[in-house]
Amino acid sequence: MFNIGTSELLIILALSLIILGPGKLPEVGQALGKALGEFKRAVREVRDDEGKK
Image (tube, rainbow, N blue to C red; front, side, top):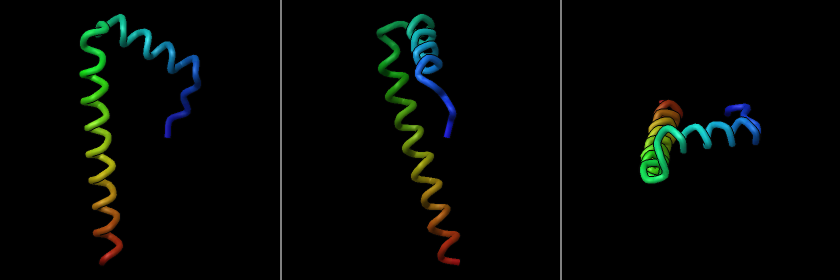
């Protein structure tokens, strides 16, 4: 999906920790996970609908 290496991922995590703070970071991660799950579910439904036509 994305071509992100370990060093880039660590930089992104460090910046998000600095910007959001340690208290808000888990909430943001949880919201992102839920959004990604809903997106995957919607894509799967579209694929299933297209396969039935």
